[in-house]
Image 1 (cartoon, rainbow, N blue to C red):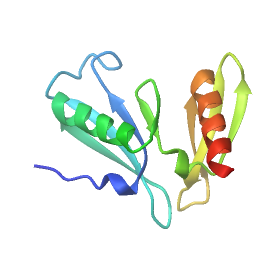
Image 2 (image 1 turned 45 degrees about the vertical axis):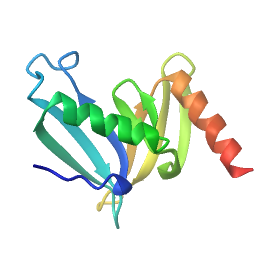
Image 3 (image 1 turned 135 degrees about the horizontal axis):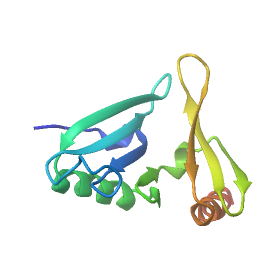
Length: 123
């Protein structure tokens, strides 16, 4: 049994058999970046497919934006920068204990959607 406080999640990366052939229905992975005094990353191993899909749905219901198997909380974005229209951009969601930024890469369509959403929310 496991409980993950989704209110503290800044971003989550889901690993499925498509990304890792060693993953299966009962051995999936979830990387989660948590908010706090510094951004912390936690790997949850061996979650099952149902648990992984339920978490993804819960995060999407909370307004997270999805880029492939990466889900990002738009309210966690400190700044975002487009690298190239074909490649996409980098989103900074906070800083680690050592002061280095936590940057996540998103594709260009998601980047544009994210920036539009953030601009609308600011108004």
